[in-house]
Each structure stands twice: as structure tokens, then as C-alpha cells.
Amino acid sequence: MRSPLLRKGGLFLALSLLFTTLLPAPTQALSNFKVAPSTVWGHTYAGKAVGNPTTTPPKVFNLEAKSKFVVNYKNFPDWAKRDFQSAVDIWAANFASAAPVTIDASWGRAPSWGVLGSARPGNYYSGFDGAPDQSLWYPSALANALAGKDLEPNNPDMVIQINSLANWNTRNDGTPSATEYDLPSVFLHEMAHGLGFLSTDSYDSFFGYGTIEQPTPYAAYAQLPDGRRLSDLPSPSIELGKALTSKLVWSGQFGNAANGGEKIILYTPARYEDGSSVSHIDEETYKDLGANSIMTPNLDAGEVFREPGSLLLAMIEDLRRKPPVGVAVGIPLPVRNATALIADSSAIITFDAPANARSAQVTSYSVRNLTTNQVKSSTESPLTFTGLKNGTSYSFSIVASNTNGTSDAVITAPMVPQAGWKRFVIDQNSDGRRISSTNFNGKPLVAYTDSKSGVLKLASWDGKIWRKATVDGAGG
Image (tube, rainbow, N blue to C red):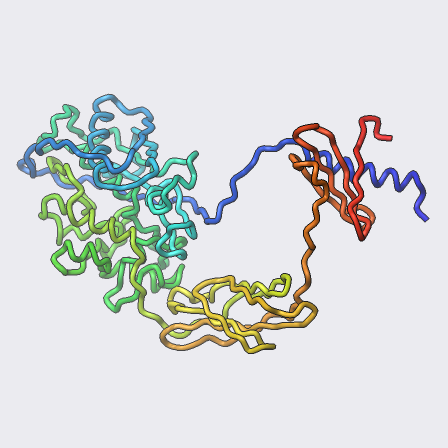
């Protein structure tokens, strides 16, 4: 038999834990999306010097802003800030977003020879409300625009680095000489990378395999000649490595319409180039198209851009839509980690996609109640079966399907639905401003305070009713 001292000590410990949890703590917003860091950069490389500047100074337009860009400068000279602002104003008039776009921009030595500028998104997001494709990873600014809000207000939406040692036109007159590079043109190009004109692929030149850890909508629009999507290839793999160094085209409806109905050819040289391959349009094909040459990988000395061009804007519009389905390869493998969770008169069926979900292009999942033979279909996990009998055992089978066939079935472990707790009003005279709960001697124990009186109370369940007590300062 437990002594009164031990019983009192156990109660004191339980109360101590409860009261500790009642102390104010900073609240954290719960998110229903996934976040991944951005590690791949898109570059602008210095092209050749030309005999004469390739464009004339542009006309000045009063542009109506569709979004707000905020730039945090690091080590930027004043003349470069003015050039950056001119590019910011152009993108603000062409990229619609209810959320502000924050840019961290730094001025310093480039990490690689010949690089004029580099950019990457702040982060990548998947599964957020408003994402056209819940399985893809959207860069910060684009994700915020689609979500209609800033998903992570404390983080920048893009990061841009500019090579301070390049031979820039520093006069702010928009007319670089034949040996000078135009900074606003680099900003326009790099901001496009930051907005999502970027694949997250990488390439191992020794083994020849390619990797895409978080497929983006850009990679989903990059298409092999046989119709397969770059985002759907096995990763890492030699197959993906070969695709990164072979012909790829754009499958987006708007981009190809702006290209006269022809599929846009992406830049994929046989020798992979970090920061250039895949994430640009083909240099040779599009180098002499005026404003539509802006997303070729190289900027020549004397070359000037003062607008994104219809081709780039159409491709950005594609990124706001759900990419077309790719070509299914084989049939789906079985789903993974299938589980039937217990609920009141119901079951919640959860599972992970097959290992080859992307290459197989899974179109749907079917879950069968093996007791009642009821079948439900969905394009994602979880699914809920209601109307079950509490106390009865149920198992469920799950199959994945595509245009080529159906996977082998996976059967969940048996589960038995159970009745949930009934609702009780513990104390109708208290608003429970702060509340905490635990178990003591196998029974629920609730500590709470009232915002009006500030009194600390304790409620314990005896199996039939809640017994309430006021805890005094003496602790007696």
C-alpha cells in the first residue's frame, strides 16, 4: 500500500509539471507545407565583346506596379543601387503578387571566373494552399504569389550576388560601350532565376549521373524528346545525367505559344555547365531575338535589356499553372508505410507514394475496406472511412494506378474503431485562459486559470464526474 507521503509527493510532482506548462510561452504558427533550402544558383556569364553596342537606349515608360520588391543591399555602391532599382521597377510591373518580394543583394568577388551575377530563391515550398501541383517545390517568391501571402516573412525570397570586378558601365545612362557590361540587364536576368526560372539539378562530371532532390515546376516543364519530364527521371541516376546533357524542350502552353507554337529549346550543352545548363534557353537558337534573348546564358559586352520579353513572361506564366502530365514508365510499385489509424466509428488510411511515383506517373490510389468491400479513390493520402462499427476489426488494401496498370496491393494491419471521449464542461464559470493536463494514478488531471479572477484550479476525473478544487498558496 502506498504511503500518504508518497501519494502526496506524487501529487506534488504532477502539480509541478502541470503548473510549469501553464507559464506563458511564445506561440508558433503551425504550417501545412514543407520547406527545403535553396542551394542551386543560376548565373549570367560574360559573353564576348562586340564591335558596337547591340541595342540603343530604351524609351522611358511609367510602369504600374503589380507587386512590391524590397531590396536589402550589402556593399553596393550608389550607382549600382540605382541600376538595380530600375530593374526592380520593371519586374514589379510584370510579376503579380500580393506578398512583397524581399531580395538580399550583395556586391563582391564572383565565386567563378566569368560570372557577372548569380541568383537563387530564398527557399522552396511544397504542399502549400494554392500550389498548382502539390508534389512540386516552388521557389519563395512564386510560392508566396500563388499562396497569396508570405509563407516565411522572416526569410528573403531571393538572393543575388553581383561580381564587383566586372567591367561595368557605371554612368547610369543605359548605354554601355562595346567593352562594358550593363548591370540592369544582369539584374533583370538574375531576378528571373530568383522568381523560378531555375532547375535544381546537379551533375557529377566524374560518374556522369544527375540529381534533382526537389523537383520544381521548371523541371516539370523541361521535357525529353520522348515526352518524359525531367522532374520524373530517377534521381540520382546516369539516365538523369544523360538527360541534363541532351536536348530538352519546354512543354508549357504559354511559353510555346509566345514562340510561334514551337517548343522552346533549353540550353543543354554536351558538357554540363554549373549555373547555366537547363536553367536557360538555348544560346545559339535565341541569341539574336532582341528582348527574347534575355534568358540565354551569356550577356555580351554592350548588350542591353530593358524588359523581360514576351518569351520569358510567358514561361513565368506557365510556372503559375500545373505542368502537363508526363509519359508513364512501367506500372507503379506498391505504396509504402500503409497504416490504418483508429478513430471513433471510422478509420483514417495513410500511406506514402510508391518509390517510382514520378516515373510511373501515378494517377490515383484505390483503398478497399476488406470487411465491407467499400472502395474509395483519391489522388493522395490520407483517406477516411466513416460509418464503421466500434469494436469490430477492419483491414484495408491499397493499390496505386497509372495509365499502364495497377500496383500490387498493400494490406494494412487490422484496426478496431473505438468511441472517443464525450464532451464535458468542467467548469462553466471559468474561461480556462491557461490550461494543462496530465494523468495521476491513471486518471486525468487538469489545471487551469481564469482570466477574470486569476484563481488557479484543479479538476480530477473520478470515473464519473469532474471534481474541482481551488489550489491555495499554502499548498495545504
